[in-house]
Length: 341
Ligand code: KG4
Ligand code: ZN
Image: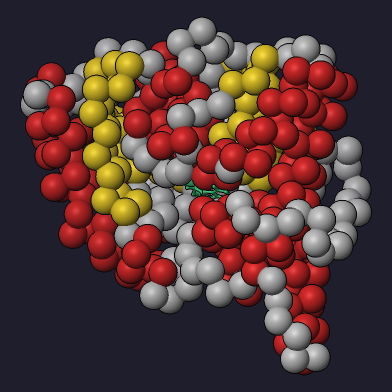
């Protein structure tokens, strides 16, 4: 079954063709990161406008790259939640128009379920159940993936998402947006033990909190500036990266240990982080669990992951009518009936 995926929930306009949820045929993406970098973060109104400008060309490109036409496609899958609502609606309306005119089923895909499905494109043998840390710019969840379409949240951030913390620390250190790759690059030449940063306390065995960690970086930078002392950016980036990835890995591994999960995964933009990958590799070995990581190129937002999850949503009977609406927030474990999807 050939699925055309459409993604526009934040600052990337994507369209991709995936066969049976596992085989990537083409993957087109128009990133707006350079433009949003001018403002230090995503400007929602600009994001919506660029999606409108780019989406037709991106969809056309992915069909051409795969040597396919819309008639070869069996269904159109689209991110309908969660995300910047103006941005989400561009993709939803485009997908609705395409599905209607080409007489194809329309499949609603939850963006975070999509991030998890990026794993299926890299690992032909990976099947639920497994445990997954989903860490992106807007969310940080530890999720038990029971089936392709049923999820249980075991832990979550009580304040900032992991990616958001990277972005804010990056801004404090003057490293630009998106912060994750910038902080990680600076950290390469830094000493992770140079600055002492706190491990925030939080209720709930698998919950995390990053607001205090982010503020600790800000305070140390401000105090150094007031004293007229220089801040070693590489050392601070390394200290922060070490601390946040250590917390994420520790919580995921604790959840794996307690639930007896033997398949451990990471997904979302932060899954591209090499320090996190290394820490988890060592930790999963110690637990004798298998670690599955997405391709680095498919950790950030893309439409391939939406097409992949779309396949499994379709198999589960999750097909939307043309009344489908976008939603700014929606839990990953939503019940389609409750939301009239
Ligand atoms: O999943 P994603 O592309 O978009 C959302 O759904 O939010 O995640 C974007 C987030 C950003 O906060 C970005 O700074 C972070 O992922 N990120 C990273 C890395 N690459 C991207 N964080 C840490 N290390 C990275 N290498
Ligand atoms: Zn995302």
